[in-house]
Length: 222
Image (cartoon, rainbow, N blue to C red; front, top):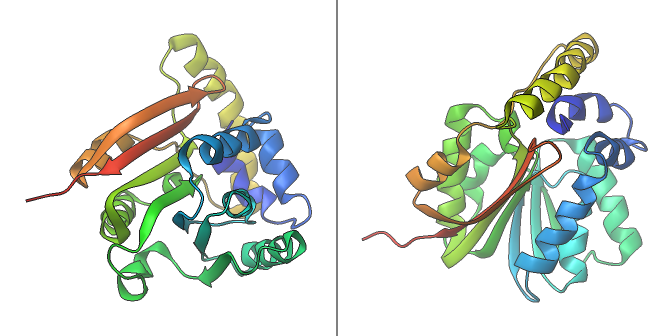
């Protein structure tokens, strides 16, 4: 829970990053990424990952036979990902690029990928950046391609929301003291997907409803 908030802190220690994020999501991060690969990724898929991080999801996809292009603006995360990918013997299946999502319009061709995946990234973007990222995802996907997003959201029920804020508020304070920044849960991603001409096909929530996995397909426009 609150993985997006504490990601800022975890990034300060390369060796503890993966363990820290998995701990912050109470073990759900790795489980959900494994679910993404087992249920929504196919062999020989071309995958575009927005925010590849330390490469965990990219490696899981490549192990299934997919080819992954992963972008990230953090040199530190890319160094970790590159090391992990080499250790896994998957360098031929995964391409890493130091790039922001707002640069994709200049460097990524139309209709290039079967799937776009992004975990714990959209909540780090501004509203305008989220819409841009979704429009770009639509553009780079092949016809009938899918976008898969995992991110932090607000719980819906009163008691889950209460517990969520009891945990989140002190974590936000720690994050601000350490990194002088904060984050917020992703809002109305279904509505934004619809605006970008995606059709939601699957959605599920985990751990106090604070983590959401959503899968949507590219709808052809006339």
